[in-house]
Length: 361
Image (tube, rainbow, N blue to C red; front, side, top):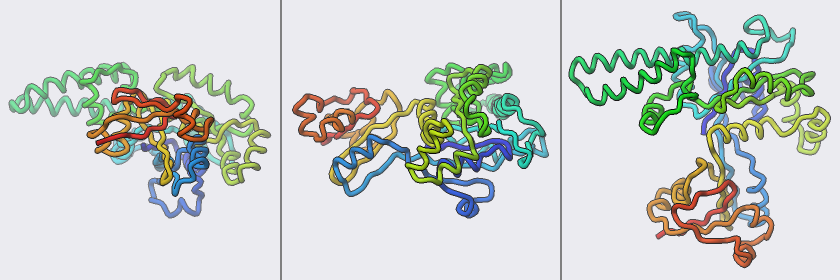
């Protein structure tokens, strides 16, 4: 999974990137000029405990790639803030994290000369819609020309109908993530990756003196952007970057003092998983304990295919026990005795925290 961090200059994007990846300025300087990349491990306490139980040769967490893109700037050609090069990069992301400046600091100039979180979020949504509308209009024009040449007429007619659906929504200022697409539409979504369909996480970068009011601030912003496809989370760049550099015990003391709950990384992953409909299952053994990321609703056979294609094709059964039960009992044998370990077929719907052992031919 890839999450792209975007936002205006001076919004705190790179500080958030540093905080959740534990990569600080001296390392970031070695990255590309217009982007910073890092692969981060998804924390999973269940996996940590299971690793202590099994003492395997290695532990493998699920991972997320996080890309911090350079702050977007107005395009000289069209006046909008998304250049074609920028659009091409963020189109490939599974989700976008928009860092919005909510802090006031006279030493850090505001890009738009004032602090207005609602305005900045709306500006981004408008840019998504504008970029998608340009694409759709160009696509319809190209398809109509193909039809005049009698090329792929039937398929072109189907796609024009789909593009018109997109166009109607966009012209009504509706992001495509709010459109109820059917299965036939999804192939076009996958092929063209429109920006306004992307799940959106909004990180409100707030001042230290706003910690006590963070819930109220988030609720006020959420009232303006009530979509279920948008997650809004608070972030306190200055103090959370400092906290990320402390050891676990010191960090918890200061978090309690500031009234902070959970790390920025934990909040980001939880919201990203919820938005994308993701969950984790686990595999355990003497060689390895590992966490795997799958879509909610996946069957045991589909989950097996995430481990290896042969496991999907040659699937017979899955031995299943929930991690809560294995952690409680301590051994597979005890779980079997108490009936927690069971055999499931290919249609079994995997639950978050399930431990699978795939039987295959």
